Image (cartoon, rainbow over the protein chains, first blue to last red):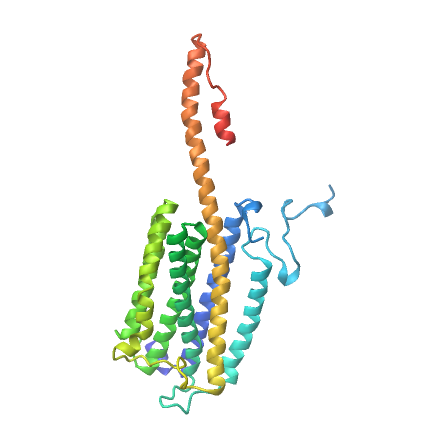
Length: 51
Length: 293
């Protein structure tokens, strides 16, 4: 494992950075949308002022 | 009813719009946020092309970073987004302390949640870059340490919010912390000027940026996209917080009504016993009234 890390090129680090950032933001966005739906389901429609 | 007429959603509202613009009936999306989301998705694809394909490696500047400069297109926008998020948290906190209205408190909370995510991304991408540039995943440098402190302070802010049950007490205490915590943000930003730091100085926050051409374009594009992603996430977190707060209030009302009903039920039982013993029942419908409320 350490050997692999040492052998990694700049592009490997660049790639991991993009994967971490995009993966985190997409996961956070999906979690937010799904949690919003779960909570919104229990709220009467007349109280959802954004609709 | 024939099988063709059966609503798969069980008679619930199917939502408005069609295709990509269809909004879930229970969700936190509106037409505006849906349009912003689509713009962000399209811009993200264009950004990936510019950042990873179109822009050249950094071979000419004083401290040439080669292809590692592409990490900066994520790192700097994430840092800008977390500054903005914590600024909005401070504004929301001040707004709550002045007006004492729920919206300011929810704005501060939603923005802090998104800001913590962007701060974590700033730390991670900086660490990856530092591993190659400095030969170390972490250095107790002024910029890195102050950013870590900022991250922990806002984690504490969110922990405080979830630890206090009373919404009014929670909003007031969180607002005070939200204002005080923002003091650290300028410290983070100016730490590279105030102390000797391994971290490089400003790249574009002056009139002669140290990068130009497509590299500068990729960085600016990334910053605009980071702000757009922050706004989209913040809108949805705000609406989620709003729904949660209203559910919490309804839950409290219901619990109070149940308690009153229980108390009235006890007195109704006593009255029933008194009736059985030959006395006149008084206020027999109290339980029904409380439950209906």
